[in-house]
Length: 177
Image 1 (tube, helix red, strand yellow):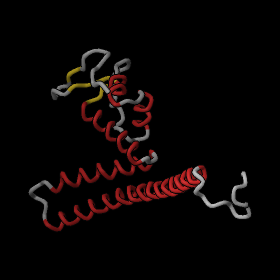
Image 2: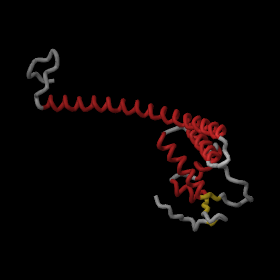
Image 3: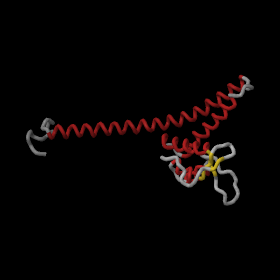
Image 4: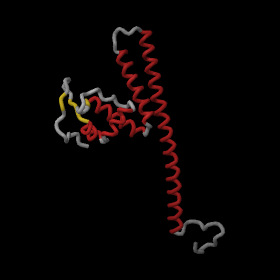
């Protein structure tokens, strides 16, 4: 998918990053403005800050990357929006813990608390991913068994067509089916 903006040049932000309108973002990530607004409403993306009437919501590169990650996880894991929200909330909490752990003034007892907190967030994420992986494994096994049955039936048909397949029970040799 092309990252070229078709509705004009991006608007620079004070920090030197670009800002994009919702339609531009939707095209960049392969979704619709309606989906982006919905994700904001349910908390998967930060809500738009207050802006003067008639002004367009502008998205930063960071918000575009967040949306890409939301969509990647949703597609990769096949999770519900609620499960996705749980994953992302835990990820944000872990990022906050990491930021606190990077500080030099964290005493060992607090560092241990933070690490336990991070472990809890990771456990929630792993539980969800493992559950989804188990469901995918079950589907894979079902499909593999079905494929084996289909292959066996094809071999039986081929063998029967070549005359090397034993006759069915109760059917005399050489009789037509």
